[in-house]
Image (cartoon, rainbow, N blue to C red; front, side, top):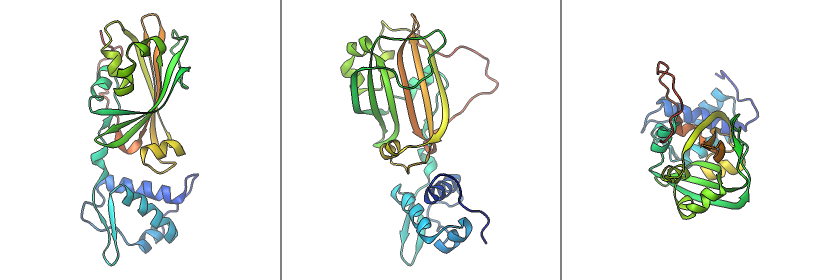
Length: 251
């Protein structure tokens, strides 16, 4: 019996993939169990056979399921094991998440401006930035893409390090630099085609977008970035009874 249908701007197979993936994450089907047959899913989702197969192909590409003629579709892995990226709520927490990250530079512009970020009320842009698009990898798998700008003089002091390491770790090690303010905003949206390709997800899949800005003691923006994570890899945890305080920054 058909209880619902797939509607909305996304392709139907992407919507179905997201629903099935969420069920795998929640443990509706465990490793080794068999998923419902294609006709059953067609009826539940009000979808065509082609739509169901395309959704299954995305799950199979991730290594989550295996389809075998005469046997059916069995669960090979559950995606909650990928949800390792904790969206940090302080700068110290953020620095602690970067030790296992390997950046890959996609392109670089030595004479650039800032990405589309909201500057602090008392912040001001520097005269020039080095801007990079980077892919961050964890244990061989892509987990975020970044549009990143670093103040030019700061970048020139540590060019090799910035090309090979997470930018915030390089900045943290610079004893001449003091971060006076660090702010980030989180929103949920759909992945565009380029982001989806880099992150190995379907176009239109939900992603968590973080827009992050750091300023120095003079109020100059020394770092600004738009960071995009696949939503299935992130979690956000907060202590709702924690005492209020300023955003942590390195002293």
